[in-house]
Length: 504
Image (tube, rainbow, N blue to C red):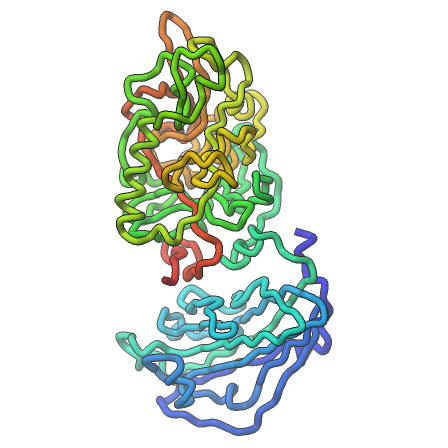
């Protein structure tokens, strides 16, 4: 995004880049006392760090803690200070110049601290030559000096340390900054090491890894932006492979980064599943939306009012829990609260959009809801929720405040943004296809035809298509959706082999 690009000028190319070179040699220390401070200016900020030969001549060996490693000279500690007469937002990077295969190991680690607070953590297991690793992102720098410490060391809790002997590595330390405050969602995006993709999705078509019929599908696979009720949201689309999360003993897929920077994700099983893999494990249970209730517009609700009412407000009041809300709440309490993970969960808006396209939404009057208009008629999915009473939250300051727990379902609009469609079938490669039918939170319509009264909500069906299904059915799966807080620390790169995980 243009407003997030670097606006600073680096003064002195050699001053801008510092070499971190190490030799994992024969497990002894050798240091030189000739130290040199490197100072460079970016966007008005003065950044200084020590680039002395004690760093370039470090001998790393496995240690029980990085602190002991620094004390004995077996680990790298680089101190970086930054200050600025005007507020700027700083990013720090390590670019890999040399990294032998023997050092591509989860025991070869780095951590960054700011004033003794952990900023980021990682290892080099999945990195390659030329990779530019973000080790600190969007750090607010003011006239007060901020002190960062970068540690690089070999964790002593490894099975075969001898394989890492006599290996030379080389990194470049660099930085950039901007004087414009980044959006909360952009901070989370860069914190996870993710970037916005190029191209513009066509919501008339499904998003697939490869496309043989360009009239029905396209290949915008990646991360794109759209407005939600809290700002700019970044959503995943198509056959993405970098949105895996391992949390609370389960695997999840990130749907999007919410406008406030929190991370919305959908349940995806007790083990990691590749795109295109059909598995019942990717859901938790089958449930109707409202068991045995179908003959009123009220039953399209995640919560509902009084069936048979004469007004829209009474019909769709958030008084009664639906069957699926009860099932979702019970799953959340058992698996998140009772297991001690609720501290990581953020409140978020889960939209049960009951705004009207056609009809009154009352009693047995034939009614189409707005998701039908957006996804079938106009192909314009949105992340905004039109009515406050449909914004299901635990806090009344964020939405309706009617949720018991901060858990919901995916919306049909989110499925449309992710690459599903209400008019094109057989998208079995985008990340939301599981080979099973599962509920969304979006009402479709109430209809009366052939003497059949039926309230219907959108599902993702067996072929990956959005389609309507009667809310009283008990053959459709539940997939909980939760949002993680934005201020927690993650490891991993979001792939199936290295999913994002919380550092507790």
